[in-house]
Image (cartoon, rainbow, N blue to C red):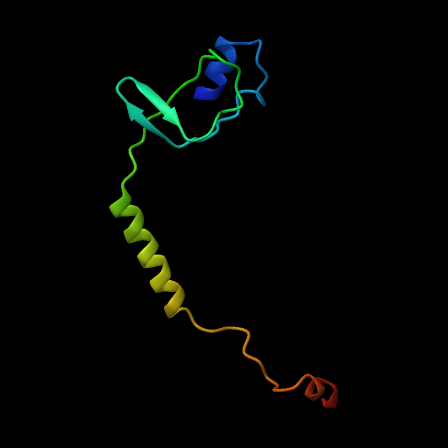
Length: 90
């Protein structure tokens, strides 16, 4: 049984659409999590919180490698003509 299905079974008054997982960014301050944006949930609504610390060094390395791969990628879609009129000459 998935976590979402377990929650639906535990709280049957909520539809599956209402229990859709959303990701919010925030900062931990003591035993409180301060979110950057207000979630679209009613006040004092119970929610399941998964804490995943951000690893900026890892994220920067991944971005650097992706940019490097884009620069090394072969150029596709090479133009076979210099002027648009050349298309009509063929």
